[in-house]
Length: 80
Image (tube, rainbow, N blue to C red; front, side):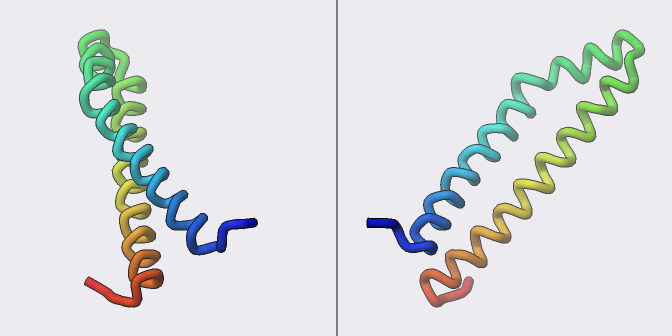
């Protein structure tokens, strides 16, 4: 028996939120030395790329949060 669309969407949104939160944590903690190395070694393109990736991750996280809130409002019939 196939899962209804809303169940699939809910499960996928939960998984996507966990993945983006994990990616942001890795970006902030593990990849931070890469930016510093880029600046210290006069590799400004690399340091700039780090910042660009960070901006994209933060924007994606914000978009996913908005989508998740809208989805949960639809599923539960209530809003914040």
